[in-house]
Image: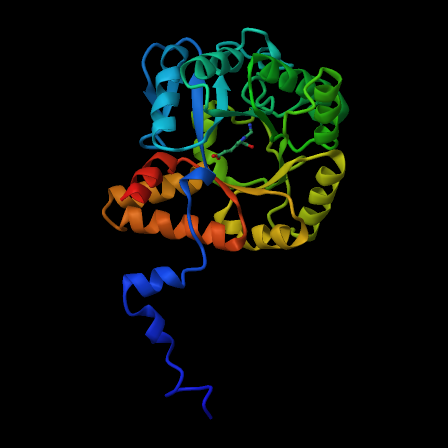
Length: 326
Ligand code: PBG
C-alpha cells in the first residue's frame, strides 16, 4: 500500500512557516472587515461601553476623526448605529433629516470620503419600547413598520450612506427598501440584508451599547429560532427574490454550520456578524489572563472565513488590521 503511512506523511507539509503558508486554504484580509461604530447624541467625550472594553459611544464631533483612523488601518467600511437623545413610540429620530445617524454620515463622508458607510436600518434604538417595529396591543406590526424602514433607509442614503443593512427581520423589508430606493433614484445603492438573524443571547452587550433592550418581552416573534436551519434557507430565498445584493448570517460563531449552508446555497456575497457577546467573552477571558487574545481572535475569524463568509463584521477589526500588518 503506497497511499498510506509510512509513504504518506501529512507532517511533511507542516514543517515550517513557508510550507504552511504555501498550502494554507483560508486567508483573512483587512479588505473584508467591517467595523461597527456607535454614535450618541448629546455627549461631548467618548464613553466606553462597560461590557465591551475598548468600544466607545462616540460624540458626533469626534466621529470624523475616528473614521479617518479606521480608514488609515486599511479597513474599508463602517457599520453605523445611532443612539438618539429622544425616543418615541414610532422611532421618529430614525428617519429625521437631522437625526444622529444622518448627521454622522455627513461628518464621516466629509472627513474620510473613501470610507464605505453602511447603516443599520432598524427602529429598536429609536423606539421608547425598544422593539424593532410599530406596536399595536403589544404586537409588532409588520407592514406598517416597512413604511418607516423605507423612510429610514432613504434618509440615510440622502445623507450619503453607501449601503443600507436592514436588520429588523420584518417580512418583505428587502423588497420594500428596494422599491423605495429605486423610486427615489437610488438604483445604485446596494442592500446588505440581515437575512438570517437569530434571536440570540449573544446580543446582550450590544443592547447596553445601543440602549436598545426591549422594555417588555423579547424578539422571538421576529428574529429566528436558534434551532432552525431549513428556515434560514427559506429566509435567504425570500431576500434574494426581493433584491438583496449581499446577505448576512448573525451571530457568527455558534452558527458556522448556517454560514456554510448559506454559502453552499447561494452565490451572493455573504457577511457574518461576529456580535457583541462573542467580543465581550473573549475580552473578559483575556483580561483575566486565561487566553491568548490575539491567537484566539485570529482563530475565530479564520473559522468564520473557512465556514464560507466573505465579509466579517467585527469589533476586533482595528486590532486585527494591526496584527495583519505584523
Ligand atoms: C438591531 C441590531 C442588533 C444588533 C445589530 N443590529 C440587536 C438586536 O437585534 O437586538 C446586534 C449586534 C451585536 O450584538 O453586536 N438594531
